[in-house]
Amino acid sequence: MSSRSPALDALIRNAEAAADRETDPLAVLALLIRLVIRSEADPYLLADTLIEGVASTVAQRIPPENRGEASVETVRLLRDRLRHYGAI
Image (cartoon, rainbow, N blue to C red):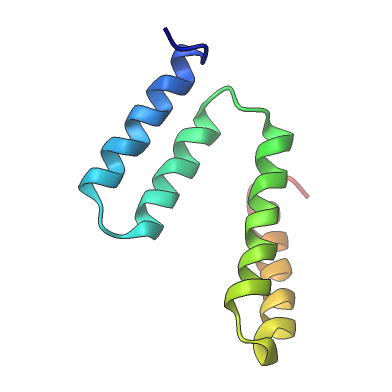
């Protein structure tokens, strides 16, 4: 018997099913993010995890010569989206 919550088990099953249907990793990630947002996951840990993902992506995947501009634009986009949702 699983020691995980039924909601987490359902989330994992949905993510696995999506991964089987989707070949685009970004589509799977977007779906998984939507599922986690709707779950009972701690919203502060979720935000921290997503921010770490953004920082790691910029640091590891963006060419060094573009990291500064990509970082500034990422922060601008975050600010714009938070304004759109009325958070700031």
